Every structure is written in structure tokens, then in C-alpha cells.
Amino acid sequence: MILAFRGNFVHTPSYGQMDMLLDKLVIVKEGKIARIATGDHESEVLQEFSLSSSDVRRLREGEFFLPGLIDTHVHAPQYKFTGTGTDVPLMEWLRKYTFPSEESYKDREAAQHRHALLVKRFLSNGTTTATYFGSLHLEPNKILVDSILALGQRAVVGKVNMDRESPEDYMETTEQGLKDAEEFVQYTLSKKTTRIYPCITPRFIPTCTVESMKGLAAIARKYNIHIQSHISECCGEVNFSRHLHPEYKTDAYVFDDMGLLTDKTLMAHGTLLTDEDIKLLVERGTSVSHCPLSNFFLGDACFRVNNAMKLGLKVGLGTDVAGGISPSMLSAIRMAVVNSRCLRAHKLAVKGGLEVTPDMEVDVISYKEGLYLATMGGAKALNIDNQVGSFEEGKEFDALLVDVNAEGGPFDIFDGDTIEDQFEKFINLGDDRNILEVYVQGVMVKQGDVFLGDSTIK
Ligand code: GUN
Ligand code: FE
Image (spheres, rainbow, N blue to C red):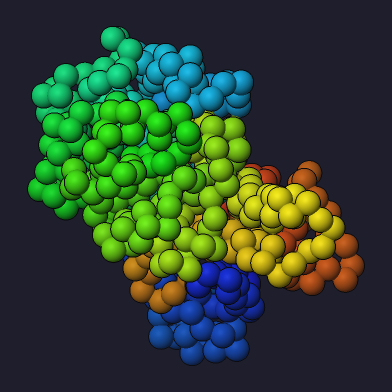
């Protein structure tokens, strides 16, 4: 299967660097980018791949390709109440909204219906890779894997483990939890797909016993798979963790001692991580999912992305649905920018003055850094940057065809808007109406309103 596209491609291969690849010919062969050539070499390249001029999809003015967006933190069984439940702090929010919602996915038909809607919603918003926390029960998580598989998304998926400090009807024994976690891993691996990665998922320190955390770490080692959890998210969580484990200085040291900080571990939030914690994570190769919108509601601080990047941490961006009330990674990019500007505003307020000083700018990021976090940053955080995250020969083609002139779209283009202006408008104002086509591993999984799914599955 060969695809050929000629037009503009935009990506962010490194933090702060946005490249506009104008008038390129891109050949996608068996799901991978086989060639990125300049447009004026079209005839030679077509000949090499035994293609004719009519095989080339020529993008129209205002259309461009963007790498697929990578959401590094989503709670699948919280989709039901996304957009509501914004009135209480984290520990109360879990009991009031989250656990009841997750528990209700035990119903097989409900799980099937809701998970399909969730995956479709995320694909529509351009999320080609999502990192999902599932629910406690085994069955709904298998259904989630089946939905992802059929609809063609790339995903990291974990069954959530909780064996203490949880509601009686939404808690497992340590033994059952470990058994189910391993069965879930085996179920996912039995699908023999290269785009769904099973993940070990201790919910967070308060709900996981030492025995469970150590047992889960052993399963992760046995299968060499991803680990995800929440770390240093807010005062309520951190204080509870310290109360349960007074012998450890911080969450990071608890996780480390349990064997849960690996180079395949992705920790959500980290708003209250110290520099020392970050250095420990860096040493272990562990990454952080920055979830700015969720942090505004449930976190107690703004994550300092530039500081973390300077310390060498791998950082991706997450929506944290439903703690974050939007499933859109474009929204997450905007929120990451706003988060950085809050840090600046805070410094000004603390100084109590009217003078803006250079140190106020150190935390500020632009949409370009935001886009990096949503693509390459996420790919690095998940250790899949050799596969996705940017347009490079040899990488898999996970991409979005964007049209800034989409009919009925959410913004307007005017004479004199440069290509970069048009692109910035899409990042700051665009939505699913601008995303015409979605590709995962070179397969078009969505076109217009139609979900085509993975046509390569027999
Ligand atoms: N900490 C433990 N569980 C959760 C959750 O579901 N969402 C968030 N944001 N934090 C958590
Ligand atoms: Fe979360």
C-alpha cells in the first residue's frame, strides 16, 4: 500500500523549533514515511516508487499535514461525566464523581457504547495516540482495547489497580488485582497489534498497598511494558501519601522504592514535584504528563514545563479527561500556554510591583512549545519517538489533514495572513471541524464524519 501527498507539512522536531515543510512530496509505504522530497523532485521520486502523477494527492491551499496529536493522560471510564463535576477538590471529587462513574462501566453494554463514543471523540479531535487509564474491573478494559483496535487508534492502555482506601464496591483484593492486571496485559498482547501497548496502572499511592505496588512493578518488568500513575498532584493527595508513608520524603521516593520508576514510566501531573524529585525521575528515565487544564481544577500549583525540560525531564501533554474538562489536545496546548503565563503573572503579583523583569519570562511558553509537547514530547514521554511524533523518513505516518478554510469552521483567514499565521490560528482557534482526515500507521481511520476504522483488520 503506497500513498503520495504533495503539499505543506508542519511539525516540531525539537522543543521550541517549529518547521514548516513547504511544498513537499511525501511517500507513505506500508504505513511508514518512505520519502520526504522537495516538490520539484516529484517526477524522479514517482518513478522510483512506480507511481504516476495521478497517484499524488495534491493538497489545496489552506490544507496541511500535522503529526497526530498524542494525549499522554486520559481516564477512559470518566468520559461519561466529562464537562461536569468541577466543584470539589481531588480527594472528594474521586468519591463523589469518579469512582461511581468508573464503577458503572461494569455493565458490558454501557462500556461498549461509551468506550466507542470516547475513542471516536478523541480521534475526531485529532488524537491519534491516547494513553488510557481504564477502570478497576477487567472486562470493561478488554472492551476498551477492542474499541481502540476496531476504530484504528494507537494507544497505551492499563487496568487500574486499587486495593486500599477506596469504596467497598470499587476496590479489589491485592491478589485479585495482580491477577487481573496480568490477565489484561496478556489479553492485549494476544491481539498481536503493533499499536496498542498494555500498561501497568497503580491508580496512585493512596489507593495501592506496598504489596500491590511491588507486585505490579514485577509484572511490568516481566513483560517489559509501560507503567503509569499519578504523582505529586495536589496538597490533599501529597498529604495523604505522607500520612500513609511517613518514612518517605516524597511520592517520587515511594514509587522508586516500589520499583515503579522505569524508563517506560509515565507519571501524571507532578505539579508539586521538587527539583530533587525531577532529578530522580530523570535518572530513572521516567517522564511526566503535564495536564494543565486538570491542574487548574484539581491541582494546587502550575507545573513549570521549562524548568522540567531544563532539568532533562521528558514531558508530554495530557487532557486528563475528566479531571480536565476538554477531550481536545488543541485545548491542552492552549492551556499549557495559559499555565505558563499564570506563572509569569504570579511572579509579578508576588513582587507587588509594576515592573516586568526578565526572570518573569523564564516560564513562558508559546504555541510552538505547546505543539511540541502534544506531539514529539508525548512520543518521547512514551518512548515511541522512533515511531511517531514528527515527519521523518522511517517513522510511521500518524497524521492529521487540516484545512484552515473548513466550511463552517471556527475562525477566518484574511488576505495577508502568512502560512504561519494560518497555522497559529488553527492551533489557537481550530477544532475538529478543521480536521478533515485522520491517519494512524498510514491507514485513514477517519474522513469527514465517517469513521473508517482499521481497514487492515480482517
Ligand atoms: N488521582 C487518583 N485518581 C485520579 C484521577 O482519576 N484523576 C486525577 N486527576 N487524579 C487522580
Ligand atoms: Fe488523572
